Image (cartoon, rainbow, N blue to C red; front, top):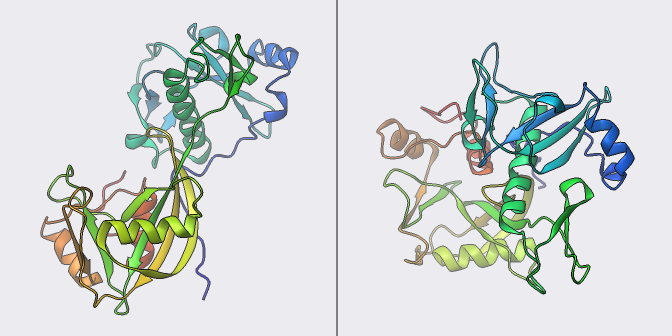
Length: 303
């Protein structure tokens, strides 16, 4: 039976037209930047200014109030308002404070969550990919921030996105498999995840990662949804999978500190006892766990 897709993912809610056809139109870009109705999201080290009253929202400024810095076209809304991101010092605005995606990504409205997710991804990429991987020359920004071009060999370089599968594994008793990485706090548990390798399908990656991490073979792999995770540069692809719960778990000690099966009652009891901290709704892991659980988890944080 095909499973319904996930209905809500915190970082996959962007509403803007990304205006990709305008990225190489210098006249259009100049006109948009000089339009006082245009709005700019200033970002510095993954953070932007946010206000919390009357509801969480990004602080957007007109171009005249934006700092000097690298700028990128983020898109346009249905009313024709154009949005840019600028990497630079955050302005001093009363009542606003810096915040990043982990703190406010699930709290912001659809437009603002999409804006911040897009800008964080571009800032990180530009900050870590300033040189040509072929000849070492410093590259220049092109296509309104969505391409870097090498002036020496003419090669074009595009934002890096690393696909990663994340899977909720259940057994014949509808128990969920949760695990802890070696570097995680003692009360943190999550579902399994891993990066897709070259020449591998997503379904193959799900099966390989589960086998490598806990020694189980899976069947009935189903895709349920995806969301960007620019922390720093992943695209998380959510799946469910089924396995034989009678087969002993065999965690890889380099990747898994411990792993165990949980019924709904056992998970609820572990969270209520403080043995496990409930994940916030920002991650696709939390959404997959809540889908299986049947609603919000006990003591679930706001973000």
